[in-house]
Length: 393
Image (cartoon, rainbow, N blue to C red):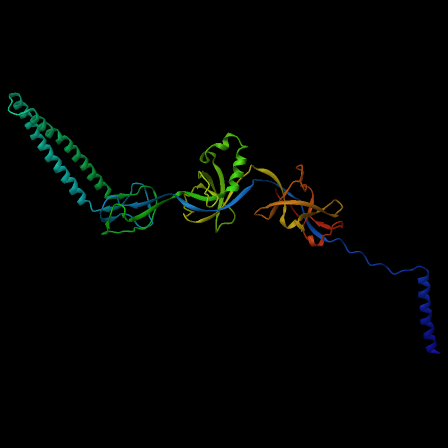
């Protein structure tokens, strides 16, 4: 009886379920998931200038190779290796005695000629009296007169010879032609210095301030610059040193391009072997931060400032050969916007070119998906998470 009662109750429950199903009842549907969260941000408007990058090197603005102008033994070196020297400062001193001997000898010969001239003048006066009485011929008088006058030329030549020996004595003191940093002494006290084609290098002096920056511009870029300059009027035809074109550069150890200079020279022809033209900038170097020979990265402005629209480079997606961004409208629905990206800036922002006609591809007040792009789907809603502070332009 008990087993029959249990079966009856189970059968009654099954029939009740069928009855409820027949009356149109249905199980509750699952709740839809919430929209995904994405980070959004506005495009940034910033004033930019187009710039080209080059590689270059630093070079001293002046370099002097110190060599002897006369032959002699080095008596004393008047500097320490690596010193800062001033123009006119004594560097090397050669033994002056041989030069003084030459001067004394030349002066003595000059005095001897002057004494001989006195005698020749007296002889000329005597011959002039004798020719009147017919004791000597006129041709003999002319010979004595020529001999007397030749002493003037010989004395003048000896005077010039004395000047030359005095110059040699002056050149025995070798001084700095420019102010700057001096290298080590290649020859020291006691060494013989020869002047002429085989004269040895004594040392070098380089000027650190200002310092020059050299770099090469390719021919295509040069033609582009020249084409742009033709539209700028008469100012563009002025020499580079007068136009004061600025540039920035950085050393290998620098972040970005923190140093500034001014372009002051361009070569007068394109090198046919390399297809480039060499340009030079001048940089203040009072603190001796820059050393000649160092490699540098150079950035040169090539346009006037203009307003540009920027978006984070990470916000730009690819679809084969097209680039696009995801825009969130006022209903939080995502749409696709094709864009034409341009150059990438150092801070990770990418320039977006305007559409045909000059209209911006993305407006400054629109919201773009900048993080969580993989969670956003076109034509589907998202939950935008706005930044706490708007990016500064």
